[in-house]
Length: 318
Image 1 (cartoon, helix red, strand yellow):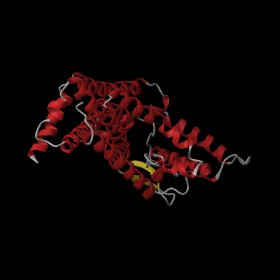
Image 2 (tube, one colour; image 1 turned 90 degrees about the horizontal axis):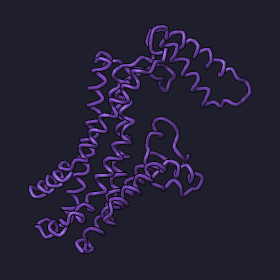
Image 3 (tube, helix red, strand yellow; image 1 turned 180 degrees about the vertical axis):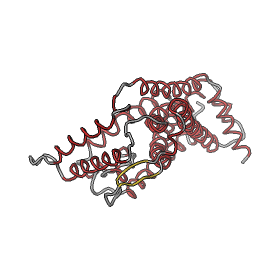
Image 4 (cartoon, helix red, strand yellow; image 1 turned 45 degrees about the vertical axis):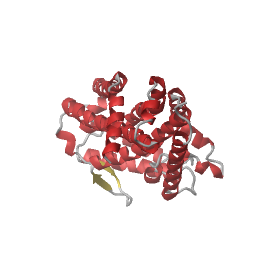
């Protein structure tokens, strides 16, 4: 076990001794600061005094839409309008400005930066094997006492550690920036929503944030494993980055395009986002949460099998 731990430490040294790693961390932190500054200089009048009139006007507009008899608004849309009206009335009754900035405004925005975390981690994963060939250290690595399987696992473990470090930085730094700019007083504010029974419910913002990050980590895990497999199979960081980035950007559109076909539900990108099972409707009516999890597990294992076969069975030092 100690030898495996040493292998992981060695891979971590390779990651963090390169300037680009710290540049990526710096970029992530700079983006958080930039987005916070953008939100601060936004002169939206709804954020300041007199916000009540905007909420009242919004409710009047929503009620007009709700009474539309043209038939263009379906039952789901009507329910959504009703919920928004109910929430606005709650804000007015309890004097809570839904548009006011607080620490959670910054922190919740940071959860959208998981796309950046995925991109940077894919770059690291894509270079785990290509860099060894580029530096000419692959032969030295393989003649050591560690088996190829352990080397493979150590590289994957180090990649995941970097992913979780970057995710932690994203969360903690956004809390720090949000607290400094907006104050920490709003930390205890609950999340206001509509329950299944149609009543107003207050829930923990922290739990909602962790839930959102949980969905993001699932996507992170799958895309990083995909990039890791391509890197192991083709020894090319550029190919691994290009394919992973392409799938990351157009995967959702691919899933929508093939959703009309029964086999479309087996595509990775049709199952990688589990949010619809909790916040909406799945891509196809015959898809369930258990089905999507099973599909993801199959892809996850398949990626690892391909990585293991290509790295351990062929002459990678040649």
